[in-house]
Image (cartoon, rainbow, N blue to C red):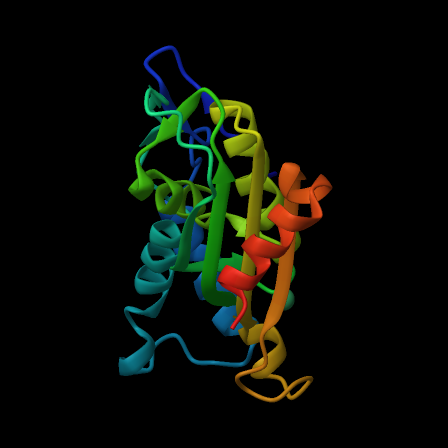
Length: 200
Ligand SMILES: [Zn+2]
């Protein structure tokens, strides 16, 4: 089950306990290999269950993110855009990776936030079994909720291994999703400015 990230009393965002049973995952990989007709005793496969379990555990674990905000003392009221944030995640339908870049923007209200935190929020939600649409929405909602800006924009471009490896689409095909909130959705000029900054 997906867990919503929640802001703790110490101002740190965590997405619930990861609940990973490494030994159980190893056994499951052993069973999967057997069910796929593979011989677990083959030298190259002997350590595979342990490696696969560790790899999935890493892909589904993230560092807590401290979302400290600051008073917008200078009254900055133009778009803040951080583009080309690299990320990778796991498709919840196939357990295969999808990866790409996120472009995140907000229009400041009374608070601002460190630029690196925008990338950390992407990472926070990417390290989970995900759908690209949901990842996009979760990043936008999180910033809206914790920063209360005048608007938020998130565009994610990604390549999905479950599509490019299986011949549904050619390798290199990207899927683009966007989530626009507040003035980035409602004000045509602001929306256009954001989209022209992030789409090349
Ligand atoms: Zn998939």
